[in-house]
Image 1 (cartoon, rainbow, N blue to C red):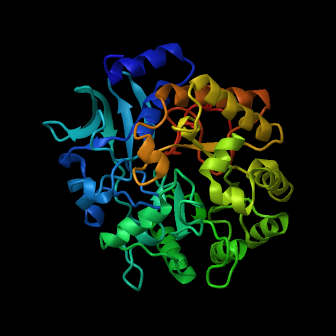
Image 2 (image 1 turned 90 degrees about the horizontal axis):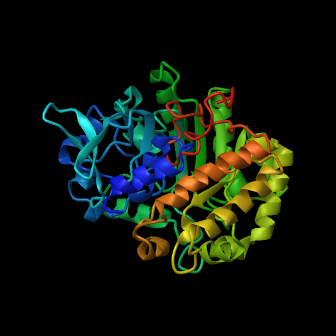
Length: 439
């Protein structure tokens, strides 16, 4: 293909059942987007909601390499509409790549657009600064630091433990930059709280609840690094669970409570449920056995792939299969030097995993892999996986859901092109609009 435009248009023609919005969204997520200075935010003092770096960097360059985008943060997300492809409303998480062929810039009239190969392909909207971001906690910390919101305000993302106890080359997941992201923010002098205090979280949620008058925030996610020992004398279930307990006691039923944690034994999973968590995300990361062992050495060492999968199935007995939603990192299947060398092989493997879980009533979801440059897989694969893989995955995902009679999972907002708010992959954009009543 002579240009990225030609590649994208070829894939839209070859896979007409995949929404065109999802094709562009996946390309932006896998390869990032550049920002003209005219499209950057004024951080927390401006009118645009800035990128919060809520857990991973999700950038293709380190902070020192981002230039002005490191000083004036880009928006948390962008929303695409219109243009020559007549795009329906599409929300995309921002992943900065100064060398991307996609660029967000303002035109002569100050209107933001998305440009590809020199042509304007969509109008760009940016999230307005929410009122709750304008108010500080009593200790001076910002709401954005303690309880940032993503997915156009739908989800409060509570990364209450900002590092991971899987540490070093022999334990860290090979695609994950959580520990480096912590280090780079601290090195840059940015506020980046390692372990968030329960009372701080509650105070931030009180501010959100007070000023989110339209109740746009519907769910919260509790997450952070894996805990193999203890934090503050608490194991993983108690550490994360105590936040849920405190939130549910203070704000009963206000938000859908979700937790992203390791695949834990059944008794620990029951504690999550008892603390008030409603949705459990025991992420399985990658399906293939060999790749799991290579890419997730800490998880293989402490738990093991087979036991991880058994625990996921056991957790369905506690939460109900519909409320167990494990994530995988879409694209690492094709990472050199160990991954599959053809799209066919990668899709076959991933589909096998989808069918395994979906046959038990469990609906996985996925995050589009961003090859962060400080990770082993990111260094070796700066271009990520081929766009064709991501488009065919959407097709395979939809087919597997249809095969097992499943609908879009709860806690992700509305499905369908033009309606979805989930911003780190297009799986919700590619499902039918009428798919689910529960959002």
